[in-house]
Image 1: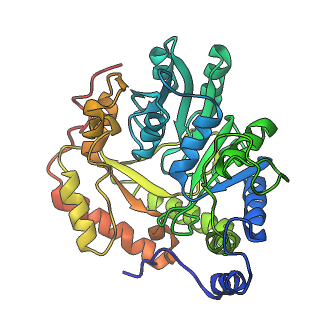
Image 2: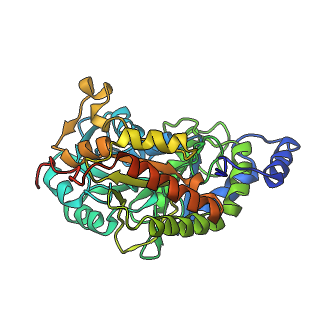
Length: 386
């Protein structure tokens, strides 16, 4: 099956990479770094971009700038990569794990309200798979209770809610350019914001505590070195040129695949609110909606048919051994715990395939389902009602 590999590169990456190699500045002060920061921030409909060596430290940086620390609580969805929670723990604060919406896989705003306490300082909203969560509802909660909204947009470069892009709703948005992301330099990260004071402090902390335009050895606050290298920026500039076309292709192929499989009742694809006006399709997420099909067997059959398929996270964030001892607060998460048992995803490179391959993928999914079909009992039958 002709599914493209990832990452992808051509002569454009090599050209820009050579320009860095032939320059006297390979580090974070090369003009390519500032160029990418400005271009990406504008693309996400924000004013400032502060690049960093990866998307984990950008989450820590955002919390540090906001003064969130010892004893403070930050509300997070139970489903995400571990960095969403560990960034909170590493600044000394306490992650509060709450359940997700049943069909969107995203943080449930109603459960956010139930998780609030006098110690709550922020909500960490994850746009899971690239489909934005209900940022309008979360923004309303933050305004009511004087909280910060931080967007973990690691999956969401180019994602939109009613025409406004991810990262522009909270005080800041954090993006990842890790090897598998839709925009990648192997590693890399970015904070975007439209708050001038936040941007100045974030840039200073990420650059050893310097102030803009100050002497190289003049440090005004406690900082560190999170800087992106010129090599990473060169690759990202080249990757960035292709991103809009790739999003369009993935979107069209996702729609085609779902249409081809619309009669397969055993699979439910991730739902997104109608306000989601663009989804970069980082992950094509589905769940097995009938006990007749075993999720792991389904994934094994797809993999055997040369369709890459991951059987979701093996556990929620709070079920990691780390949080047996690390400080946290856990609310009941029956939906999240069901999703780790019955869900899966296809990586975005599947959706970069040609149309004839998408037809082959659809047939492989259909065969994988029919091979295990024995009935139609709901796989969510044991969920605890709200």
